[in-house]
Length: 483
Image (cartoon, rainbow, N blue to C red; front, side, top):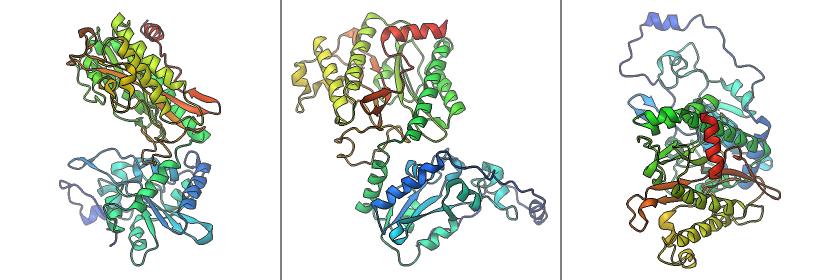
């Protein structure tokens, strides 16, 4: 089976093109080359990454697609973001990467030759550049030609139409990043489950667990822009409090910063006021803001190189925590601080979660909320404290905001921390508004504090330290921004 050739994607309501117009459109266009010195950011990092992947699978063809466009409605596609593994291996991040495929072709003792199969710039002697709504230059912007893409990446390039020829006839042992491009899956005859493909996905995740200094710099840039976005939100609170859907106003303010400074948000912004903060992934963001309640803002900027920040702060909309709000906030902060204190090379990944949950369980027991002791609640066959906190306390961070998720357990969840790993620590309390095990004053409180940290030689560096963490510092920070 082969891939279908590329062709025109015209809308059903397009006006017909006469022969005279077609002829006229094919003439008198100036050349528009890319600057000859343009390279993907971090250009010198990518050969080493591909070499590490090559060494894991000698003699096998490796296929890593960027992914395909997905229809949002009728003839409008969602914004396209290439698969993170493709980005990590090529440095290509743009919306123009849809349908492109990186192949690492076995090349004997030398390892693999990387080849990029892509759709080059539309030639001006045909109709695609002005008639194709999905790929035409006049509709979605220009793309590099094959030679320019090769200069950008340092990788040999071929036309996407030729990928089908590569996949025809007898094939070498092949692994595919399956589930990324259904046409590639079909063309390579992928079964629904193939352990070889699962192993490729796992290795691609595991190779990204430890970040190099360039990546850490990109992550710090994402964090810095996110800090600015949080400041924007606080300054916008007076307006948001007056709006009937203040959560949407908050979302829009942060998302503006993300689009202005980077590619956009790392994930859908959570702007949760009052009891909405008890919904872990509240993204409807359609509520009003009550000045007597808290705002849980979970948001991150994604850089143009597609590295993600992921930060949460819980803010008093009045500018001052009430005694009950501060009591709950201080417990979450103590849990986060206990988790952060465990971070160092050689520590177990799960240590920070265990440390944070011990603080949470002990606090809940002290409040008289738990029907058993903290020790009983923490036992693996009990876990009653989880009614009020439920989820994990952090994850790896990188090109994905939940990074390296396909890694095998012994390398990630049950593994040990190494210098250069970047992760979040984010314990929370989610005290549901209808939970009759809670005193009335605690019901409807949702609090999460999340920071981004990089593991260093002797501990961990708080990348998001520019945002305040203690209740007192949060109040002072808000007051200064609103002054």
